[in-house]
Image (tube, rainbow over all chains, first blue to last red; front, side):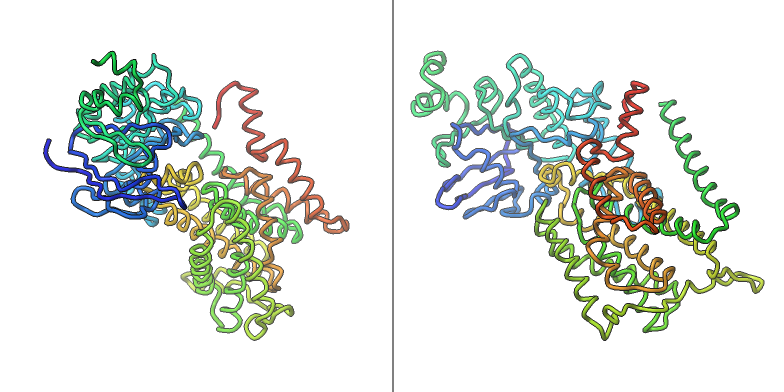
Length: 260
Length: 328
């Protein structure tokens, strides 16, 4: 644990008169799991969207691996090595699970027009590369038996795993997960937690947005708490869990009593 | 896996049989009229298949496709008539000109999305037709371009040559161009490039988050698509020998659109089937003064309400319900 993989400096995002992200400073260390919590509308997803280029920052800087990536196009940021999932689970719902994972690796190959039309060794090599990556990830996210299923027919929990698999297929250094357990019932959460732990073992840095306290407090190394776009506090789960403001405003008094 | 492989070779065999059948047709059908209908089927089939790439596979409703067909046709015609070029170089240059137009129109139109893109491209279509209609110094305007030459003979060794004076020879040429178009589109669709097209169709945001540039991908698809629209256009110009501004009209676009939708958008053979069926019907009913677009309108309404996947989609549904096996 040393190098800072992502650094956000003085980041602001306005929607008209509304400041959704307000002068935010934080950093993410290589190899850690970093969790962002906060009530609805506190700017968590907006922050993700600004980091990944889906929204333009009003002010401030996002530095990834020493490079300023503020306001680059989303596909450029993905190519630099930041992958993300969406709050509303996004998969290519008409395609099979395998096809979904294959396209995830598209950005790492060339697929030029001439090769596509004429064929050739390099071309088939690239195709094979994507397939192999997809096969690896099928196993990794535990969807080997569902490989031929249409993605839209999977359960919500399996779709979450698939969307994480697709993000991993881009070979990221940093993975942003927007509510990876959202819409999944409590009994099915464990498979997702195991998956996130497995990703950490692969030395991929993870940022989580979470509402479920079990996930938000037990998985991460550090937590940042947002409210109205501002950072209230930051620290280890224990520190944040004992912070009086956070306990009262976000976790409720019962949790405070339990942890004390 | 084994059954899949067998199915694949079966399919390939079917295609080869179809091509062989198509090659044999002129031996049995000597009527100029029927061969003419077949040639028109092939031209519209090419145009519809090319539109299918951008619309069916990439999900971008490009309503300027008739304009690109017209740009190809006029570029080819003008290169041959005004610059005196031979058909073959004119064919290639005209297709490239169409691609250049496609690039600039695409660059502008892709600033919009969804239905706005459809409306925007339709405006471009109207603009192109108006320009062709009014730029009389270049295009002869409403008088039209007359006397566009047939393809030049291809010399063979030993002093022989392939000429394109007979209608059968023209049929073979258009068949060749059609098969070439279909092979290339098939290859593109079944490659990583085609997968990116379909990713954009499925969910543009998700595709971007996976590192796929939406603009580049859509533009790529459009350029390949208009290249073949141009190809079909040049052959049309040379085969008919006459061009008027109506050939780039947005009605032509809607005809292509209807071919695609009735045959089955986003399927390999759908646009071809649509183009063949509707061209045959409309040519055979030529004598009867029945307004074609009224009939098309009814057909389209029926397809959109009851058979969203077009003919190919319908056959697939039937196949699944008969055999219980899930197709795609």
